[in-house]
Length: 303
Image 1: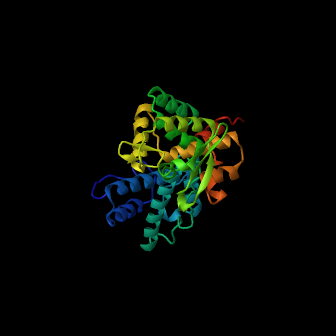
Image 2 (image 1 turned 30 degrees about the vertical axis):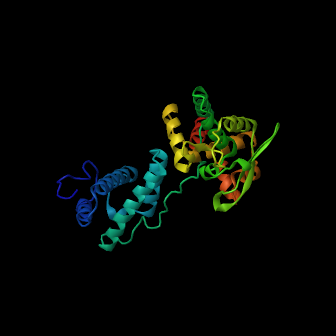
Image 3 (image 1 turned 90 degrees about the vertical axis):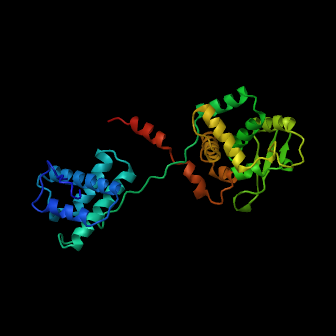
């Protein structure tokens, strides 16, 4: 690094000019300390890999596009680095080689045409069954009727927090064997009617009987009037602390979506209608496996 006297390539077989070219690159740029440290680490790692893989000294002019591709794949497959980490290394190397080309130290940038790895689209995370059970038990132990109604609505309808805080008494219909709730102010000001499964009906009925007789027509009220987005998030924070894991409205929406598809495999149309998605492409992300599921599936492989 700059004026450090440290040989970045110590212990690595390199050509006669590699160290001076690299020092010139570092000294000629006003990199932040953290960025400089990453560049040194990634270039040293690349030089070591190059020398060992090709059984020759690391010489910048002998680096090929194939070398950069193979190094990228080595980081991902052999070392198991995250996609973001691999792409960072690739970007930093590309910057170095671009400068070397501009200084006529090499004929062309061998990393220029090497594509970064694509991030695999994973399903949004939700709570697992044991976490949902713990949440509902903690609510029951505290006899928190309002919280039970709120979390039941999240977990059984997949509503957004904006849907929940605007629900009015006239939007809820509960009969002996069925029920529904109308979300009139959904995303894009679109209205939708969503069925209420039995646990959600029971939770709402209990809250209606307990609900204070205030003038507001909103279903969920507190001492100061209708609950707001902030009030719901504070409730989530309260139970996050009690349960020992993070809870927030959109996580509960994801939880409902995952559970619905577990019980109704492939029924994306119904789920899209319940969640208020305009396109099935948005709903399809819940078909993707979660990262933990992918890891478990990989562990079951045998040869």
